[in-house]
Image (cartoon, rainbow, N blue to C red; front, side, top):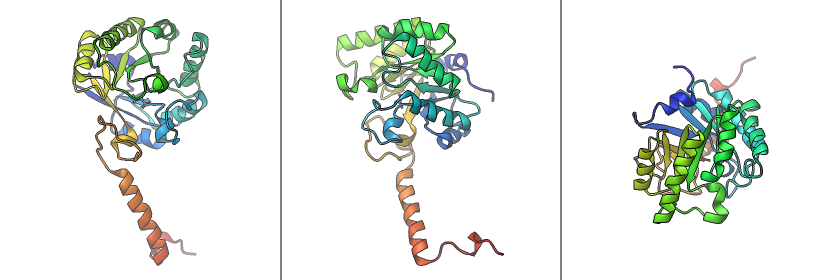
Length: 265
Ligand code: KIV
């Protein structure tokens, strides 16, 4: 299978639902690429899952470039979308173009993702005109945690109407896909039906064209928090602790290293 492109992702619209996953380093990217995901996201959620912060706000451009470059070394086929972190695109459009350019130029990403609605449209048009594919992100936007918290969005009629307007405006501005996070399933379905580009839901129900989960969440590797929308497909956290304990006790008992782990002279 050849490399996925934004155009191929767009063409998934209305076809079979597809899954995507966030990855943060070489090894997670390698596993995800071997599992044949079409789309991988280097999410700024790495601030929590990998770096142990309380939110995505401390994540910087340098951190995103560093992790995206590691992911790119593990990927052969998937389209890799890298998050523009907090304040890397809100301050000025010039800075945003430079920062998005860094993710493509220095790290090798295929596209960028940014959070927000209609207020981002001028910037998105400029990025797209300059050859930078953009994925949108509406609903619960974690970079706005200080203003909206981690609340489900779009529950009131006014909020739902705003999200629909935002989705259409972002499509018009040129995004090739739209992440919808933590919003009522019926609203996400309505938005999905109104758009010609694929929606990718996280906590947004089964009506989206695709779904995304965070790698550590779906593998049971992140013990600190388990939102309602997460399904754990494995318990690798528990398995890891068990393996580490087994190693420790074998060293203590003298059964590791065995003869098969030793070099002879
Ligand atoms: O940073 C991230 O992992 C994300 C997903 C939750 C979509 O943006």
